[in-house]
Length: 201
Image (cartoon, rainbow, N blue to C red; front, side, top):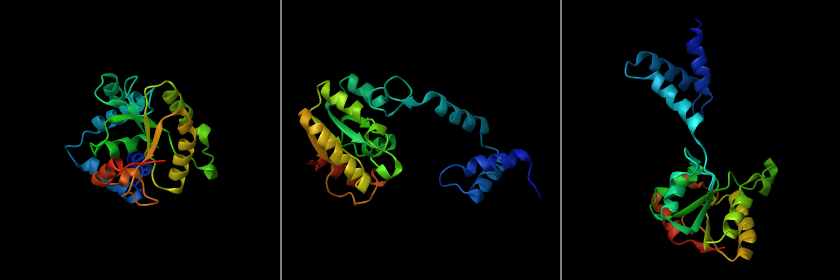
């Protein structure tokens, strides 16, 4: 028996989400129909709001709803150390690092890592914007916190090559992160230790 079109449409859209296959989409759809406490308009409104209101911070390229992200706003108020910038591949990496409560500097999001096979070269990333921030002055250290994958290590080496002539210390997360692992999946204790024991590139 075919389901009503509205049910099929929701299942198709849910199945597009990462980690949700057709069976999970079907279960979620029928749960929404059967559960009295689900507020579908609130869920729909939250999805619409995130697409309408969230953009990239003009300074660090983290997610923001204002001109600056909440972390850059803290830097502006002097609540964080503007002289050290932690470079990450994606905004979700910032969340992982923030959970450690170890790092109290600024951030810079590259928007990915170098991956020539997939056409991601230095011009595809926010590297020039990082160099401009360093050239503007006030930054003494750049902590490169890309994941210890082949692409993450290549990106770290490239950044060190570009940043060192500008007179800043370039450091890298230290021990504890397995080669080939991703920053976003590391636990807070491991990341905290890696930040504390960072090494110079």
